[in-house]
Every structure is written in structure tokens, then in C-alpha cells.
Image (cartoon, rainbow over all chains, first blue to last red; front, side, top):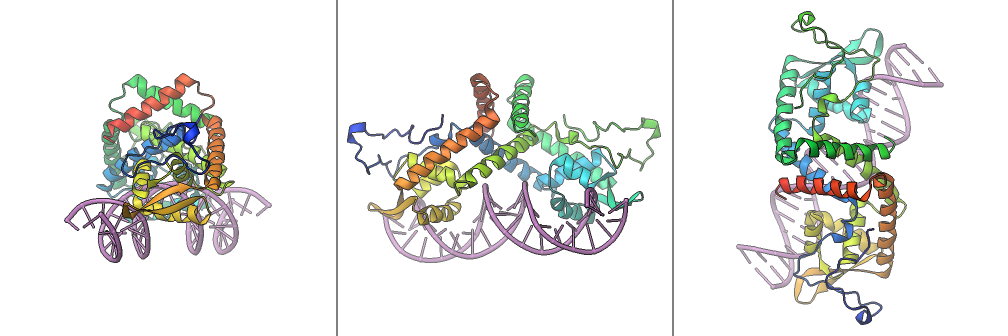
Length: 173
Length: 173
DNA sequence: TATTGTTATACTCTATAACTATA
DNA sequence: TATAGTTATAGAGTATAACAATA
């Protein structure tokens, strides 16, 4: 499907193409990324980057990064869970959770308390401030999502989620 | 749409919920990310990460990163273009191109040659080795894409691309 | 032996300010 | 003055190996 140089509008006729004289683009014309547009993953990455950049900007007002918001919201939804459960739920590596939780704890949003029945583990619970901030963060995220997905009706949004789900399943994840 | 704690299966009846006693999850049960699943961007990011991680793994066999492959492929498709044209085509910042081109040049895949009419600029052209590697990289990327998008028929793939395009356009990009 | 949380580390991607040489 | 390429730097996300405490 994807082929190099299939899109070059300056393409010279085959006869004019000398062995080492590839058709050159003009130094001033606008150049495209057509050679990559056959790759669905390329489009997914570019659109996702746009969306994530805006979400990051929005959450900055609440002093949250995307991953920090995700962690806080899952803790509020599942108070008492262990760090390893949280890492599994978000598919992030356990080491990467540590500094995130350090920050949430030092900001008084989350508590780490020893699990009596397993003294290796910590139970994570939100404080009232953590619950309030999680709510505000989800509201901000919802408003952000309306900006990007508001043009899609319910059926189209479901279609997008369904297609994404099938791609995820194809990965064997 | 997205609401904290809407998905907690351990939710106690309202009357049993004391002010500071949130319903706790069991330390052993599997915890989900339901509190974030209302966010379409969250699904996009997770699926995109899966796809990109596999592509990165595949391209490693050719000693290419995703961004390095993208740069090489666009140069092969538009030989003679300037670095600023390339940066615009891929929506990457000019500074981030420099080390990528340094690497491609030192590996003998790309040439930087002064533009006679504008001595500030460099024209980028692929070598024969660069052309060959670009072709192999696109073949590897196509095979990788079949793994993830092969289950979708042509219509579904077009649907996915169309929906992604509308999200991109909603962003004003 | 295996698991929980931790430390240290590294790689990738992205972004911005400021410099140089040219225009 | 503006632009092309560059340097330096920083932040964010992700990943792995190895350790101490505990199971």
C-alpha cells in the first residue's frame, strides 16, 4: 500500500529519469507527507498527539499531568487499592508510579497506608482534597473532549471506540 | 459523561457510607480503569501506544526509529527539499530534525548540500542506500500494519481514517 | 522462591529560547 | 528585520535491571 515516491507531483517522465537524477522538488513549494499517509498508525499518532497536547495544557491549570490525573482518578474510583493493582489497571510500570504517588502524597491528595495483612504493600486512598481535584480534573477533561469529539455524534463516537477496540484486540492485548 | 466512582462494584449502599469511609476495594481483586473509559482520548492514546511500540520494535531491526524512518521516507519521496520544508511536512520542530539528519548523513543514507540560490539552506537528497533502506522500512511498516489493521476491511479502515480526520479538523489543525 | 515497592538509569518524543550566517 | 539551520536544554512518557523487606 505505502510506496515511496508515489506522490511526487514533479515526477519526470520515466525516460527523462537518469540513473542518479531523481526528480527534485522546488525549494519553495509546500512538501507533503504523502509517503506516510498509507500508514494508519501514522494518522493515529498525529491525531493522538494533538489531542494529548491540548489535554496536557488544560490539566496544567490544575497542576496535573495526564498520567497524574489518571492515577488520581483511579484511586478515587477504587480507594484502598495497592500500587501493583493500580499499575496493572493503567498498564504502567511499577517504578513509574513511585514518583507520581510521592507527588500526590506530598500535595495531600492521596494517602499511602500499610496493608496489615501484607506488610509489603500500601493501600492507596484519596483525601477529600484528592476527591475534589479528581472531580474538577474529569470535568476539565470532559470539556476538552467536547472540543475534539463534539462534532461526532453518539454513533460515530461508538464506531471510533469499536474500531480502536478491535485494533487493540488484534494486538493480542 | 465520565464520573468518578460510577463503576465501583463494591459500592456500599448510600446509608452505610460514613463521611470518611469510602468503599474500599479488596487488596486482591482486579482493578479496572473504568473511571477513565469515558474519555475517547484515553483509548486513542493506549491503542496508539501499543501500535507504536510494535512499530518501533520492528524498525529496530533496520536500526531506525519511527521518526528517523519518517524523515528518510519523506526525503526519498521529495528529493531536494529543505529542512524547513521537511519539518513542516512532518509537523516536527526544526531543532529536532538536526540530530536525525546528522545520523542519516553519517550513515550514508542522506546528503546535505548547499542550495546555491540560498546559502542558508540545505537541500536533502537520499543516496541509493537511503532509497533502498526507505523501501525496506516501508515494507516492514506495511507488514506491521497488517498485524494491527488487517482485521479491518477496506471500508472500516476508511471509516477509521475519516473519523481521525474529523477529530484532527476539530482541533483546528 | 516470589512479590511489593523502590532506586537508578536510559531512551524516545516533544518543545522553546537563543545563537550564526545568511537573506 | 526576517529566515535557515543550529545548539543547548528541559519536560514528559515509557522501559528495564537490581535491590530491601516481606510473603
